[in-house]
Length: 150
Image 1 (cartoon, rainbow, N blue to C red):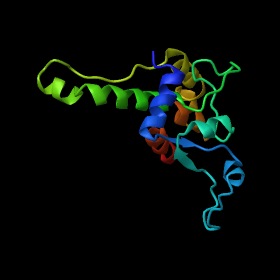
Image 2 (image 1 turned 180 degrees about the vertical axis):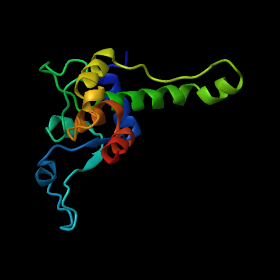
Image 3 (image 1 turned 90 degrees about the vertical axis):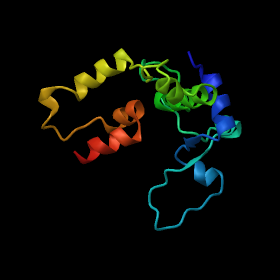
Image 4 (image 1 turned 180 degrees about the horizontal axis):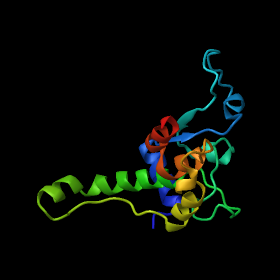
């Protein structure tokens, strides 16, 4: 299991972009151009951002009722783990040599069950209410953008 601590160490080493919390730009005395109304900002991870409460925090997808919060989403940890594994192992070469069939992260059954209740049922198809933030936390930006425009 890729622990939060290991993920944060790799995030720092790889300069992984993390989302700043609301109000963090003002705390850092960063002024954006007025034509950019969205204050969503990303910076490479450094421990100072975490200690200074400048990062956006997320509840674990597997237990959203838990009090624990993290500055990395599950999708972030998967990306960091993939990056770390592929730094050591050339998975594409192993596929070419037929030593590896394929590789992909496994799903969280709890999160998928919760998404099925709020989103993945036939009764929800015509609904304009979509759990976009949950989809984003679990699947990432590309999948979320697809469902925003569907």
